[in-house]
Amino acid sequence: MTPAANGASRLLLHVLLLCVVAQLAFRPAHRQSRIAAQPLESRPSSALDVKAFLPIVADAVRIAEREEAMRVVGRFDDVDGGAWGLEVDGAYAYLGQLDRETGHRMMAVIDVSDPSTPRRVGRVSDLGGIAFSLEVVGAYVFSAAGSAGLVVIDVSDPTLPRVVSTLDLELDAFDVEVRGPLAFVLEFEVDGSYSSDTFVLIADVSEATQPVQLARLPVSGNAHSLAIAADSSGRAVYVGDSYLDELLVIDVRDATRPEVQSRLPMPGVRDLKVTGDRLLIASTPNGRDDDNVRILDISEPLRPHELGALTIGQTYIVAGEGSYAYSFTGSGLVAIDISRPLDAHVVAQADVTGLGVLWAVRPSGNLVYLSSHGGEPEDELVILERGPP
Image (cartoon, rainbow, N blue to C red):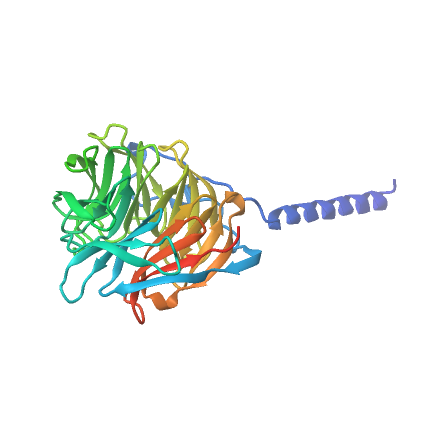
């Protein structure tokens, strides 16, 4: 081969290699997780090294080719003062309410067996505090009722719900999750400042009529942007703090001696929910085009790792059931197929801008229940249908 031919061949090979490298560099890659639990004692006291823990930045949100619009199938607007905590169990929805005229903090029992015509069948006239969060377990509803503490309500007769016990707290009860005989309560001063102390309180509720405090763990100095979720086994509790941009993993295998196992960087975390062995996270990173809905594997509860993520705009609320997650983005509610977390994508949307402050989202089968306050024209409970799978 002549020197000229040899040089041309080398040049051609070089060009081909550059093309291959370019293709690899710009080819959309599957999401890979780099979130890893780090022992608390090994974390530096200085600012967190977020880049060491965050996954590769996601592509823009993928919308299903045949995206559906969720449609309203029912409304309950007999709510004067705000719809707050919400839980759905079978044919009944349980809704925290505030009566503007009397100032009473109520809980309504609403028959939703026919979603098109929800109707109230019973109510507790005054819980003593706003029902910020509700959890249904068997014949009881556990309410994180603000200044009233943890309130337990017997709903064995839906037409005659009654308070059977109250666990007083030093501060306000804001969120509650119940797993087996244990209740996990997020406690802080709801009307306080950003320096208000925050705690996870653990109570034995094996006797619902006599809840007993077992432990109280301080978790943060910020009281305005935390959320709590307990994994299905009751071995770990997850707390999100958007002020410190952290996800706390708490070991509760010994319910009398809970310990913070690890702190993972989680910019703008706003809400957490557990569905099966997955932890769903909604976030609102300040000024960053980061992932807003994250899906973590918690099959090993104390060692969560990321399965997938989605960028859909700043998200404030997340909920999930089965293969679907639901998230409120500030202007709308989206349904996300999470059956394959690496390929999570939006399958339906609903415009809920007229609802004011959306407080809770609860999926149940093909329906999605929303509670809101401060909207026009009414505060209300809204029932949406996601559409066919």
